[in-house]
Every structure is written in C-alpha cells, then in structure tokens.
Amino acid sequence: MDITGLTIRELSDRLKQGELSSTGLTEAYLKRIEEVDGKIHAYITVSREEALEQASEADRRIKEGKDVTALTGIPIALKDIFCTRGLRTTCASRILEDFTPPYDATVVKRLKDAGAVILGKLNMDEFAMGSSNENSAFFKTLNPWDTGCVPGGSSGGSAAAVAASECAASVGTDTGGSIRQPASCCGVVGLKPTYGRVSRLGMVAFASSLDQAGPLTRCVEDAAIVLNVIAGHDPGDATSIDAPVPDYTDGIGQGIKGMKIGIPGEYFVEGLDGEVDAAVRQAMEVLKDAGAETVDISLPHTEYAISVYYLVATAEASSNLARYDGVKYGLRVDEGRGLLEMYKLTRDRGFGPEVKRRIMLGTYSLSAGYYDAYYRKASQVRTLIKRDFEEAFKVCDLILTPTSPTAAFRLGERMEDPLTMYLSDIFTISCNLAGIPGISLPCGFTSGGLPIGLQLLSRPLEEQTLLRAAYTYEQSTDWHKRRPDV
Ligand code: GLN
View 1 (cartoon, rainbow, N blue to C red):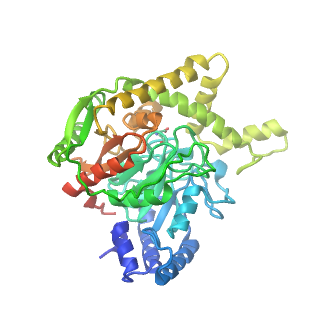
View 2 (view 1 turned 135 degrees about the vertical axis):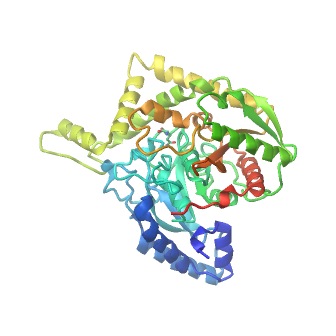
View 3 (view 1 turned 180 degrees about the vertical axis):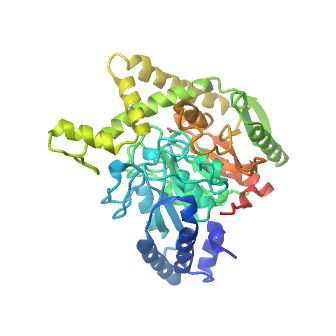
C-alpha cells in the first residue's frame, strides 16, 4: 500500500503504534515528490534536509511519548506565502525571489511546535492574486486530474500537492477564495476559517482585512486536526480573535439532524455549469437524508460582491505592496541613476502584470477625488453584504452553494481576459467580505473526470458546525476517496 495517500489520522495512528517512523514517512514523500512533481510542478522549494531533521526529532518525541500531537511526525507543506526562518519565501514573485525570512510566521511556529515536518514551499499566484496559478512568476502548477487544466488558485500548489499525494496536508491562504476554489478544482477539502481565527503574523500581506490562512487536506477530519494546531489568539496580530479554541474534531461525528441549511437563490443562476449544478443539488439530497432541512434564503447584495472585492482588495494591496521598494526587502535593481529610478526599476522588474494591474487599480480608487466614489462606497456595500449573512443566519445554521461556477478550466483559457478570471471567485468572495468561515469539499465529478466542489458557510466562529456537516456528507459519499492517476 502507498502510505503517501493516507489521511493524517491514519498516519498518526501508525506513527504512534510504531508501525511507521516519521523518517520513513518523510522519505516516502520526498521520493513521491521526486517522482511526480516533474509533472505537477507544485513545489517552489523542497526542504529535504530540514524535513529529515524535523522527522528524526519527531521520531524521538514519539519514542519518548513526550508532547505528541496528531501532527507530530506528519509531513506537510506550506503555500510560499508563509515566512519560514532560514527557508526562502518567494510569494511566487521575482521581487522576493531571494528572500529568506529571519523568523517563522505564527502558523509555521505552531506547526513546528506540534511536531509537524515541513516538506517545502508550494507554488501560488504571485502575491496570491489569481485563480489559476498562472500568475506565478516562476512556472505553472498543473491539475493532477488533467494536466491540461489549471489547479485553481491562488493556493493551487497547495491543493495540487495534496491531490497528488506530495504531502499529507498543506496550509494555504484565502482572501477571496484561494483555499476553497483550488480545493474544489483538485478534489480536496479546503477550509477558510473565520477572519481572525488564525494569526496573520508572518503571512505576506495581500488584503489585510480579508486574508486568512487555513488547511487543505484529503478529508474533513484532517482539516479539523490541522485547524486545531494553527487556530488561536496571537498578540502579534492585532486582528486575531481572542476566543478559546475548541477541539475541532470533537462532535464531528454527531450528525446534522434538525440542522437548517439555507439555499441562496442568487447562487443558482445563469453561468453556473449544468454538471456543477446537478452535483450540488444531489449533495443537498444527501444532507436531507442525513436529517437536515433545507430552506430557501436570499443574499440580495450578492451581485455587488465582485465589484466590492476588487475595490477593497486592490486598495489594500496597493498599500501593502508599497513596502517592496528595493530598500528593505528582496530585489533591488539599481543602475546608479538615483533613488527614484531605483524604485521604478525594482518595481517594474520585480512585479508581474497582474500585480501591477492591482496596484494601479488600488492606488486609483484610494486617490483624492475618487476615494468617496470607490473605496468608501465599496466599504459601505461590504457592510450590506455582511448584513445579508446576518439576516440569513437567523433562519438557517449553514448555507450551501457551489464552490465555483465551473470545474477546473483549461490552461490559458482565462488569461486574456482578467474579468472572466475574476468571475471564477463569484461564489467564494462574499464569505471573505463578511469574515465568516467556509469549507469546500468534493461532491462529484464532471463527465470529463474533473472534481466538483460543494461549499458550506456558517456563522463566525462556528467552524465546528461547518466541520460536522461536511463530515456527515463525507461519511455518506466516497468522492474524497478517489485519487488522480498522476
Ligand atoms: N482569485 C482572487 C484574487 O485574485 C482571490 C485570491 C485569494 O483569495 N488570494 O484576488
């Protein structure tokens, strides 16, 4: 049997029973990466030596029976947006190509403290801007189910690596759908927690009021296991929530009898692919059979979500990315013609076309004279979108939608037209604007053999409800057990 395809729970049990060592497991993953990553291109950096050291330390911990968690000895990988001490962190950008952080992001620190083994850093759209990984400055990650298709984005490397068994789990980030949409495209589970549930310290900032880190895993229980480790208050992140962290695996199997699931009319409209629509409706039946009740709801401001997002996110990005000036971080292009010229050359060569487009859009909408018409207006509509959810959650416990209007699309298909690309996130963006948690899980396949994702949303800090419903669905189906033949 191939151990690289097992779940965290299965691996952790074998490690604890001594049937497997973390060193052996880590070697198996490193071998798997060597064998398949030439086809998938999920990794930007493989940290072989460090991983093997961490594995032997984990083996020692397990042998002594000291501080053993469900992640001790488990090989995972990280989107290349998390600062890792002594390990290059590029954000898939030329401007950070040679940047080696002097510290670990809080997420990374928590994973290391739990004894996880870090296999390396995964490809993404540059600065997390994109839905296909095609905006990486280095190379394109391919979808393990069909290498002519994109893996989704921006955490495309993170989703593809899990799908192709190149790690047991990964951690990505989601600003407008970047965990859930690639999870959907690659047939894995992706969870975006409540805004502030997981610390943003050491996570390269894109849009600070939206960014949130979360797990990409093979099954729902694994997502709960990873969330247990990465969630929690961090005084180093002013927006981090100071609320107790429950054990997210607790009660996961309690079922969903009597739970009310809202179906928003605005999400089942023209533009939604027929096969996706059918799979998601089938999933509603599965949840009803498990004892849930569905109710029709309305999220009336949904139509403004994309516009609001592309004003708020670009405005925040233009401010956040001002720090890359050739002085403090990464690339510097200095041809001796003065400071201003140095800034210009550095940013011109360091950023790719999509990043430049976002900086320009954001700078424009924040500029004097336009601020009220664009940024302020967008912030006001954002509040209305948030209220839509508050109203909806008065009559339901969860909201069910497709994750994305289509399955994975073909490479190159949406690159010519940024607007079509932006529409890939039409069902995931509102959740970020409202700050609520959301999960994507596999709910079927297209006739072409591509995975389809189901999205569930809940009230803030109710990740447990989300996980319970997702787990119940997963127990009644076996979509998550299918693996691509890489
Ligand atoms: N695709 C969206 C964008 O390009 C979302 C990206 C994200 O969630 N990081 O902005």
